[in-house]
Length: 428
View 1 (spheres, rainbow, N blue to C red):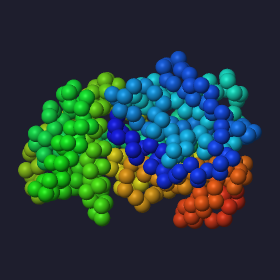
View 2: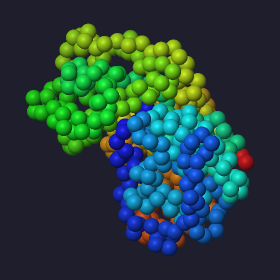
View 3: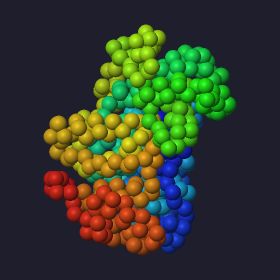
View 4: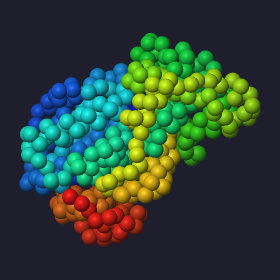
């Protein structure tokens, strides 16, 4: 639901990586033929070419638009052209991922399908010593929910750029952006804010590129555009205004056009509400608030969100979070809110967060993602895989990893990084 139909930022975290970055001897791995789970989800298991270290790494991919077929999203399953499994297989991990049994909003389906995937792996390959999660965007929320609810299965997780604090707030953020767009650009998008015509859904990419974006970037539209950005709270880069606003506009509008009806159907009711919201940031806020239509969420949808889509903020296993500071699709406040809740609740395992000062949704470098994974392993007391780094990675990649680690206060070899002192002793 919540993520854009555009997967360019989610795809491999926009990793600036090419094939030569991995050591050539480490790229080979053996993947079984894709197969189907009972739910209809397609799954993939890949084993390392060298000896398996006994641990399993699961990749929870990001959002797929509701009008896409069920499939493993290959554009998300690579680090700059290298399959995700190759990175982890090179470090000795077994690797598994799946499609989820539906596209669009698939948090519940993804959670069930990943639990089933662990059981499938056990039957086919044996019981892993440890099971780790790496999730991005929608997959980050799924990974966090699984870690909170099943510490007996999952040892630790990395959750990148996900709506961890409040799923309701995420719905309202994107709903506000769509609704306010009609106020500042009336009539530009056919249909209502939450009832896109079928023809528009089917041809949205072309309509966005040929009609919406040219109108938004017309010089005469600049005052309206700047007010929309300010009132909706959509971030951009001042030094790269045209390109970043183009991306932000496309991302936040695409959800409402393509995925709104799927969200309503999946949640069992209309989820957006703004009955008491006071909007500010325009040149005439009094007039703005009089113009904005008001909606109330259906009780059934609210109950579903509260019971199935809301994190507790109390992980009992190590959780590492990443988020770009200027994410136009999932606001940075989502990760901050989760950290604050965990602190207030006195969570047994306080999450460890690494902010990334950059624009874009899931716009991380390869080194930043791998760094977060390595910190997760250290936090879990599992440093065995770190011994393979010199053999698995090329010199330039190792240099990038060390630079990223030093930026976050981790010096020296990853194998010698201290486990964060505030973490309690690791339980089995």
